[in-house]
Length: 177
Ligand SMILES: [Zn+2]
Ligand SMILES: [Zn+2]
Image (tube, rainbow, N blue to C red):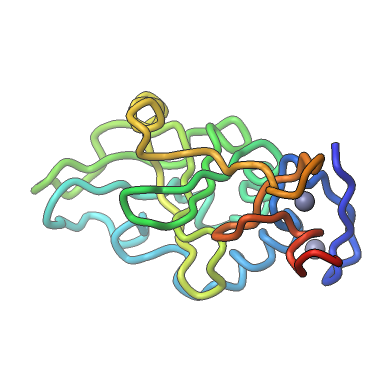
């Protein structure tokens, strides 16, 4: 446990689990215009697409806040080494499957997907949500494609590194911070 105070919302959070304030993270996602992209939008069904894709659970799209709050409380950050971005992963937000998969050429979902992934999770403009399979994600972790965030490089600090940085939120200002 490493108690950090958010300078934006004044909330406290455990920086060994959250590199940035979880409350502000959810607010940022809710304010992101293209958080639900056309490709993953269930309101556009039926619609065919080039290649396999997933669509989000309609309940999550119409009322995202409780799902995202639960996801942020229970999920985890990863670095996506293939795309060079940071993602946030959570199994079954609010206990439901957050989406389903549509095979190439099909217009409707054919199987359920049990996990929520927010890509570019630290970007106020590019963060976007879709559904993935836990089994597939676990294999990608095993293969080293997704790597959990490391700890802050400052000696004795157990907090997580900020996405793209070597230090945590409380040590981002350099030696004297
Ligand atoms: Zn905050
Ligand atoms: Zn630190």
